[in-house]
Length: 91
Image 1 (tube, rainbow, N blue to C red):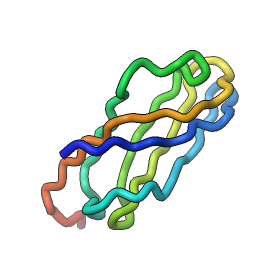
Image 2 (cartoon, rainbow, N blue to C red):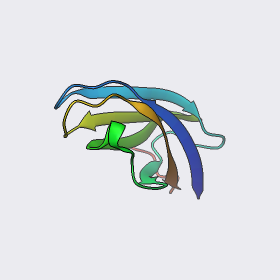
Image 3 (cartoon, helix red, strand yellow):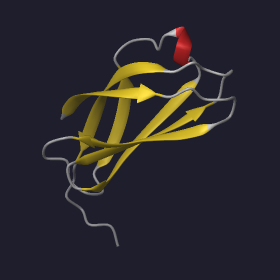
Image 4 (cartoon, rainbow, N blue to C red):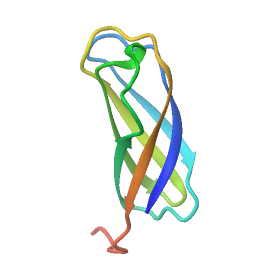
């Protein structure tokens, strides 16, 4: 299934990382596979940011950000979280 998520990318230096955590997503299960898809091109204030998502607590989406470009000023962004929940426990 696909869920729209909104998040804020903070000011980040070159090659810096940041975390955006605890975005509530109803029905999201722990260890579900999540793929983030941009809703549109990122604007110039966040160009070069890579976002990865995961769920370690049921109902909570966590996003890790990595800045591979130049220093960015940050901005509020939105993406689609594609949730692939196969209900398979992780050992």
